[in-house]
Amino acid sequence: DLEFLSKNKDSLPEKIILDIVSPEKSLFSGEVDEITVPAAQGYLGSLPGHAPLLSELQVGVISYRQGTDESYLFCSMGFLEVLEDRVSVLAEKAELADQIDIEQARTDQSDAEEVLRVGDEVTDYTEVTLRIREASTRLEVVAKVGRTT
Image (cartoon, rainbow, N blue to C red; front, side, top):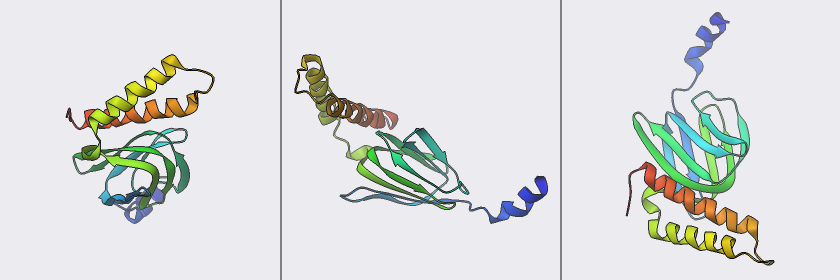
C-alpha cells in the first residue's frame, strides 16, 4: 500500500550502527549504509530498517559499505543480531583485511590440504575442512582489497 509506505518512509533509519567484535577485540563500530554477512543459510544483506532477526554465522567474508567505500573482514562462526537500526556481529574469529597474515593463510591452507590428502583413521575431516575454509576465506578477503603481501 503506497499510502502506508509514504507515511512510514520518514520513520525508517538512514544508517545502520554496526558493531563487529571477537573474543579478543572490537574490530569495527560505526555507521554504515549496508552490511553483508555469512549467515547460517547463506549470505545475508541488511539495509536500514531491516526486520529483526538472529542467526548463526558461518565461515565467510563480512562486507560493509560506508558511502562508496567498501570494507571486508574475515569471520568464522559466531552470532548475528539484526535490529531495524543496528547490527551486532559476535564472531568467534574475525580479522580485518590488513591484519591477515597472507603467508600464514597460504601455509595453513596447504598444510590442511596435505592432511586431507594423506588422511588416516584419526584425521578429523570436519576440523581439517574448517581449517581449509578459514584459510581460503582469509585469502579471499585480502584479494578483495588488492593485498598481495
